[in-house]
Length: 126
Image 1 (cartoon, one colour):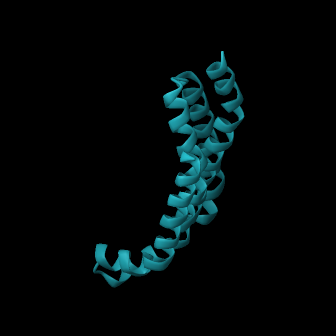
Image 2: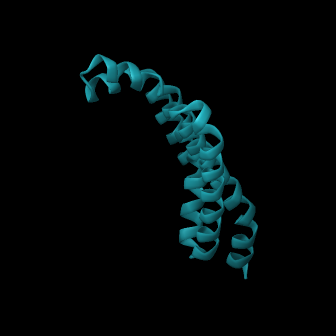
Image 3: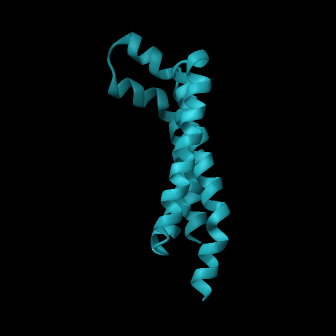
């Protein structure tokens, strides 16, 4: 049930960023150049909560199960994926590559923790 609530929450944030992102930029910046530059990255701001949902939800499960070794190991793996993505994407895509690498790291963290989840389930049942 908590996972479903989390999913609805990130969908809400993504929709809010999609609908209000321009206004948020305008509130935070007054310089037209900054506003223009920030608006170019709004699609990434919309995607970030959706891409991070699984990782953040599984973080809570792993913390509650005190499975910190798995969390650490999957964070190391996700960091290596992030580094590879940065090195591959930033030279050609600039800040868009950096945002893409962040999204990729969120997905890698969610997938890697998801792969370790059956072990946490087995521990909880023993």
